[in-house]
Image 1 (spheres, rainbow, N blue to C red):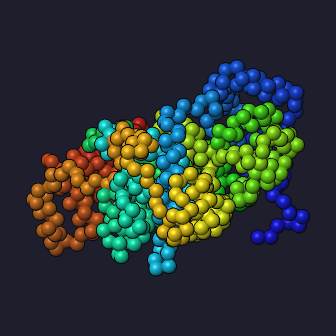
Image 2 (cartoon, helix red, strand yellow; image 1 turned 90 degrees about the horizontal axis):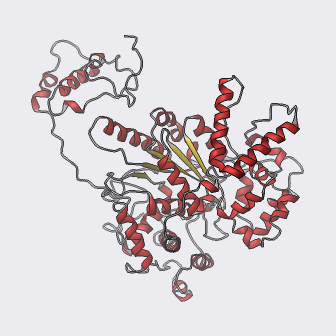
Length: 576
């Protein structure tokens, strides 16, 4: 890529105006003093009565402005900060220390499992960095939200991102569902038969574990939407009570460029599927480079989903940023956050705290003064929101409680988080499967895993897995959380309630054929369908879900009796 001459540093704000919302850019400010008074009034309202009251006032004003034909555009992008204000965050209910402890074990075991599969006689590949960056997003779900099949609700459906599968195996190992021999069978379906773990979620290869195949990019989002729609259909038809079930889909920001990933968003919004939650892991990287180096993928996705009718929750910054943003009374820090493109954010996490001080905070003297008392190490410790379980918990709780629309959570993370400087934020990190001895020891130290240098030095390609034992207090806590939530996830159960199928006579007309009269296959199908719908035991299960062309196939005769399914019924006078 060619850059303009003189562009030697990270991006300057004036080059990135296209990634801002631009709400006021097209209008002149004819009375700056009055504008300042209005803004001061809003600040006072927030200070005295909090953000929730301010939200109501602002929404009331926007509603009134629309009624008075004031041209106020829909706000599709907000500032590059967390959607949920600090004073509205739900309190985290878990044991932070226990959860942090076994999350570290899982991250270690997931990386070691892929690394062990790279020894010279195997070399089957795998992905280390995706789960390393997304561990918090998954663990908050496992510990507090994902209901298993023994839960009174019937359990949730979770569509896991395929490249994060090592993390799900590492958790199952902690739960006692998988053994070390199983972990060593990763991607070796033939040679380790009986202990094989499929590369990605694969219900045919692991029929008691994985529920849904998701790794073909775009299939996860589509299937999750249809699952949420099907749940509502089952509820609406009185077949099954799905009213308390949630559908979760974990996706990557690069994956959202697949046409299938965005192609059905309007269906979820049109049917008000508030039982559906997308969690997009915004690590700013696709397979081998930035998703939007010159732009901001979180802002783009926020606008796209909000425009499609979704509820949007951004989780951009961890709790360490809260005090800095509170001090940012003149908006200088938020301005830098808004103007910095993703390519620079990626570079920051591949550098150091000192680099961030100079090139991020150093863009403005006021923001540089803001961190003057922080060490380079403290600046480096300013986490991104997707690594902060408090921020993630607040977002998940807000999502499941939101009514009327599906929700998307955009969580900012670092790909390869915690794996060390050779992995974190690197463009090649997705393709990196091996850890050097230096990487292993640094990773162990970072996670505080009780494994010695001697154990690691014994064999580079066989670093030990770690499990503290089922009696360890943190593992007891882990198991208690899953028991309370209704059992393990993922889990696939193959037993089902039998359905009484139509009697043989229902097929007699179709078997006789059309005689001398020619018949189209669609005509034959519709005739058979009509007979099946008349079956006294089975027929009640048929209610057409019609995208289009039912009349073309001669199905209009069904409409008066079987009707067409719509979750809202028919609220208009039909033309015919």
